[in-house]
Amino acid sequence: MNSFSGSKQEVISGMENFVSTQLKYLKPVEDSWQPQDWLPDLTSEDWMESVEAFREPAKGLSDAVLVVLVGDMVTEEALPTYQTLINGFEGVSDKTGTDTSPWAQWTRGWTAEENRHGDLLNKYLYLTGRVDMRAVEVTIQNLLSKGFDPSTAQDPYRGFIYTSFQERATKISHKNVAKLAREQGDDNLQGICSAIAADEARHEKVYTNFINHIFEQDPDGAMLAFRDLMRAQIVMPSHLMQDGADPNLFDNFSIIAQQLGVYTAKHYSEIVEHLVRTWNLENLTGLSSKAAEAQDYLCQLGSRYKKLAERSQRRKSRIEQRKFSWIFNRKV
Figure 1 (spheres, helix red, strand yellow):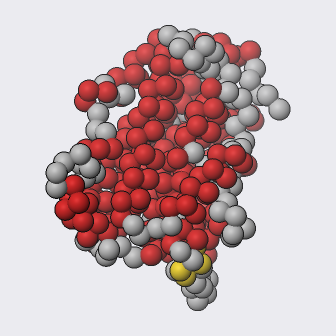
Figure 2 (cartoon, helix red, strand yellow):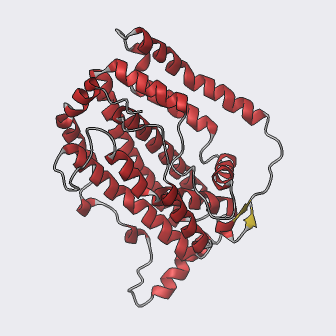
Figure 3 (spheres, helix red, strand yellow):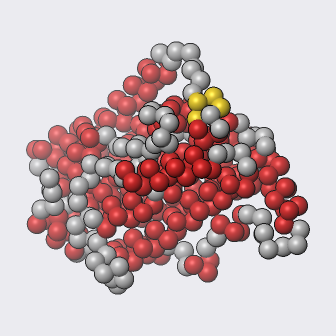
């Protein structure tokens, strides 16, 4: 159901000047890193030696880290789905593909920066020779074909709450993979994941700023949108990934990420708490009765999730091995 009411339309249409102030968080192309900056130069005369030197530290990466890295890369490669989602939000779409509105400029600029992430991780994995690239490519095509539904409908309130959450989640995931890469001796991968995480941090800042502005203009609407999205729970962008072999691929990938501490149920609860603090939800006053109920629910939600995460951690049984086509059907 489309929950984009007249009051929301007014808020979104009135935000263009504010959105234009946020475009500063996009880096000019000439100041941006590009995937090639992190990769061997195949046009040089000593390209073979450069590739060998690049591959050497990747030999020390564990299969578990490779699985999480592939899952993160597949998620980044589904970027067309995410741009389509944002362009479907009422009041912010890029109707011609070259609109000059601040909303359209942001979405295209964000997409351009995000596009480098999947490109770089894909090329990194290809050059290491450590993964089955065809199985990975099948997974990417399947995910793009299946799409995903984050329960935002065409509502920009819900949509930008979702992106605020998701940008922080991907930042955490890439930072933790960078840490594991450093521990396992691959400085190349550490640098790559750290650079991507830094992009996600800038993008997170903008999306949380959008919602902070919306809270200032329409606290009731923003609060109810946040509540509705959290009741539906945050669905990960790659939850429909399939490789044609494992019907539980996303769940198995998520379990490995949880076991490595890359992205866990505790992180989920901490992101909820972070957003509640960032948007100063506890101190908002003058709310309608429904919005005040939603406020109570949201302010307690992070601690509730944290307790559930701790309980789940204590109940952990033995770790079962899982087979992944991405690493030539080896078990992790």
